[in-house]
Amino acid sequence: IAILHAIGVFCVIFIGSMITGLLAGVLCALLFKYLRLKEHHETQVIEAALCFAFPWAAYYSAEALELSGIVSILFCGIVMATYARSNLSSHGVELTRDLFECLAMIAETFVFNYLGMAVFTFPIFNG
Image (cartoon, rainbow, N blue to C red):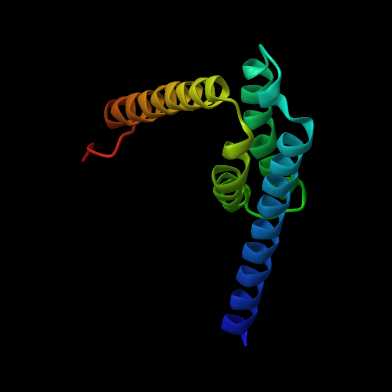
């Protein structure tokens, strides 16, 4: 009975997170489609900001609902990569890609730095 309950809770959290991410991704794609930002000049910063805002909103919405923010971002990103990218200008795609690469590198550097410091600060090797 406990295993069935755990499986049920897992499925509810996963499906709820998936729906939250899909909803945010679809809203983002529709926003880009109907605003037609790629037809205007000098809107790549707005496009990049919106490409960061929607996954962020999906994450915090899922967390507020006590769901998984990571799963929500995953599905939001899948939908945005499939449907929203085609509605971005070429400069917007380039700027967004560069910004995400920069943030990924900063996050990776932080994680490896933190893990490297943890080797010397946590007393795991003391007998």
